[in-house]
Length: 578
Image (tube, rainbow, N blue to C red):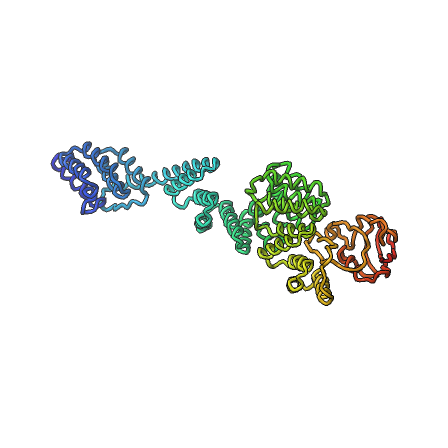
């Protein structure tokens, strides 16, 4: 047994060693303020009097009031050593463990302590690792709960706490980056996903795949499609069952014009998640790109039944139905999209309204087309196609000045469209502005040299300039689904109204007769509704406008021989023009 004086001397030496290892020589306690300095003196006095219980209690108060973590940890380690010296093995281990849980970076100088306390420290270190892991998992669980409630600030705090307990925890890193993504903080989200991926093979392949998926999404949103494709291919290689990665990969490929590869990716996403309306929608868009109208309609009708409140599904269904030739169903789908997005918060209402404007224009319902174009532009003034349909509808209604303004605005927003230059050239022609008309039509041909409508229109303008100046007659033809219009033509007419249908989608060439005017040349020659005119004097008829121009180029009193199909039966009809 150690005599009291010797024991006291031993404790003083031990405490001195602890404080030398833990507290800087200049005295951190004194820096914390007079009250902490007084507590320190009281603790030292209690120690000098061999009152370890009081000394331990006072040092605990000092530790609790220390502002800095490093200072707090050092004093707690002093308390643990005093408890160890006083024979409180369990309390000493608990204090060491708690100190290391709070600050795992605590340094330890084993040469200053006896073997028994070194064993306490190392055991506490092992227990602290387990406790910090458990605390990290608990924080992640709470963060996931808040994430499910979309309380992103609260979720972020929990994930940050998890990373303070376990730096580099893959799940916490991924979820924190995901919170940044939901909070629309893309730079921080990208940095978080990159930090996750930097851990390499230490991260579960499925989590790495998810991180790559979200990186691909960020790249794709920024228009970095090549980077997106590269990282998304890595994501699906790591986890072929990652449906979201396949879906985003398809979207990125589609933006690059790789339609076949995009369709393959969307098909994989749909096969992995056949009940997901978004997967159905993306595959249906691929079908629309490929003009597989029946497949697109079937898939989108299934999608709208599964998720009837999603306006984008109805918008795509309208497009597919239009391609299929079901205009009534298309209008209903577009109206549903508008109804479900009344504030155009997702851009679906404006897009659907613009599609309605195009539909009504093709159907020669020009007033309705104008109303829908105006409505779309009220939501989004940057919709180029809405300006185009607005201009074409005004042109058809006789408002050439308004048509000019609309088409000029369309070109200001997107000057790279040959068809818009052609349309504006037609309007300039009708306004008698031949210089502007010629300039616009030449611009259209410089962009698209094989543009037959622009070539014919330019020829008409140049012929008009060679004749004595006179007012241009009213338009005699309307634009097709591609938005092209021809300037008015002089000369004979067949007196036929042609059907506005998408010939390319139907795999047809020619001009379909919708109505034959009684008493006109076509009526006298015996032409009938639904006749499909294929050739005129042996020349292929590509569309109704081409046929009108050819007939107008003939002399009055001449005869045009038309080759046509009537109920799939080939026929030839001679039409005398007058």
